[in-house]
Length: 196
Image 1: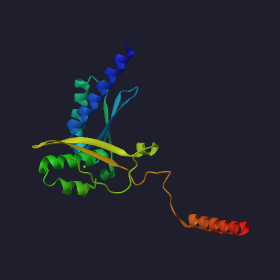
Image 2: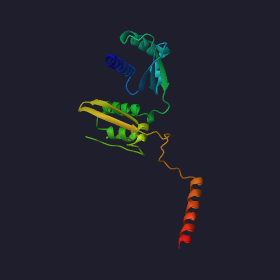
Image 3: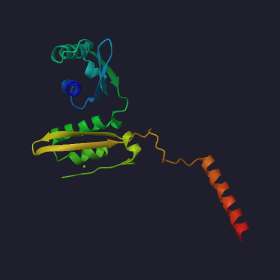
């Protein structure tokens, strides 16, 4: 019985997330997170265009709050906006921009858009270093979406590894590292001379 309640709870949460993303616009929202507090429900919306999401004098947010109360029977929903400073490093926004460009201009110019975003019948666009396995794979931002073109539905997948992510297998060669290499090389030479 508890499992059914939990599944229903998660289905309702997913419906809230999908509704918020659809109502606020494609290509603007990166993610929606629902947090439950003793005061009420907090819906955190990550976006790179907070002005469009909020609307004039908060009219879009007020309308969204009222809809969430009525449609999803939330007691006290509070919509919070979290701004994304670098939208080109957010996989969801990049994927939706590519999908919108495909829908608007068709498949004729899709290579130009894809190369502009540097990100694949399957076309694969790649630039830089991307972890594909192991624990570090969790640090890769991954998103997929679809574009509805006249020729059919096209899938768009985007994976981005932010440049500020620390990877333990990345080695930085600096002056200290060069000194250690020189010391180890001299020790190795001395040891080989003693062995002869």
